[in-house]
Image (cartoon, rainbow over all chains, first blue to last red; front, side):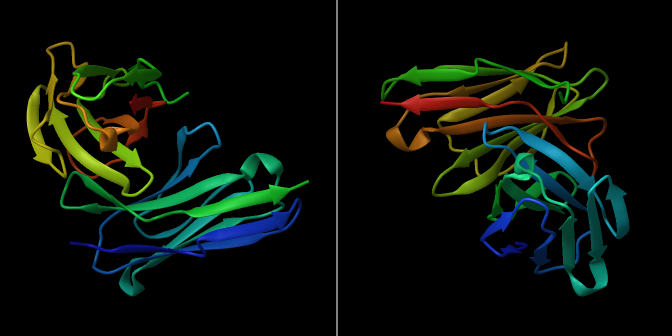
Length: 108
Length: 113
């Protein structure tokens, strides 16, 4: 099956810093989602991004499907950005295969 | 708020017991997915239903079963519970049955003592 690897596993930044999170996948995929799991456990959709670049406020994502990776950019980090960021790719039509996540801590 | 609701939020039970987790999808969504998040296994896909029919199975144990009812809500039944079943169980929904954005509920946190 598809393997999904995320890096770095942990990231500690000061408020205001920028960050780049990476997701590599082992096989061709048609679609990929980025999620943020907040400290209360809730999973929040960030991007559904099979290819190209999307932006939503301070967050943006780029997927290069031919090279099997996706990047999530967070600019001007805020403490509320803390949590775990997951990427997940579709295997077949229905099943999301998840990476292990990047744990982000933003210090005030 | 994703529009997906799950009950209960927390559940504490003993080994050997049976519990039922409930999920209501977003209005208009026909697909429901169940995922398990445990400390050692991460997030894993369990099962998917589309418009009342099972569509895909992942790493779901035989002790677990699910169904989707005519009103499209879904229930995940966990029986003969073991300590290792303690986890956060998420339900997600999407409009169709193919590769679409999945919207996640708040989860049910299960603790088996």
